[in-house]
Image (tube, rainbow, N blue to C red; front, side, top):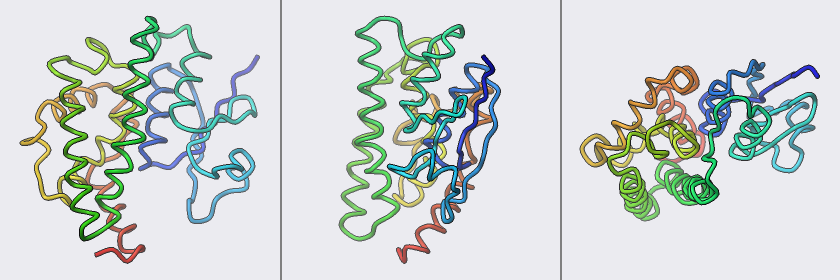
Length: 219
């Protein structure tokens, strides 16, 4: 059966970035269709009618939605390449826990930092710093969150590396000074071609965030 793989994409989205990295890790040829999120295509509305969000992976005409669900699908379908998830059931559950933490705790906290002002911004800053402390403790002295090799947790988190400059600039702290192990880990991940070719420049992302803030009327 022919494998037609299309990704409904957006360059600076950390969630789309995850899928691009997974596809590159598995060596899968795919077509990227970049969406205009202010004028969503009929394809996006048809393929993801519930959330109407990117990313959407379309595999032989069938859509898969939500970034980490897509990553797991890629891992299972293209299983002839090294797995992104650990084979051990406990370690697999552990990896899924941290990916869930990143999505449900770190991401909304980080978003509140740049999409709010006043007390909410300040409390979000404190909460985000605490998130990074927890993640740095989990990383410890390992090369990657998955220990010696790039894996599922790394893939889930590295997509937000492009926002580090935004966080530290708007939060008025230094990632390198406060979280050196996370910065070193990010730089290590970026030496992988699958990551470097899939992620956006930090300052480019910052400019996008400033534009969004302006549109939302947030000083």
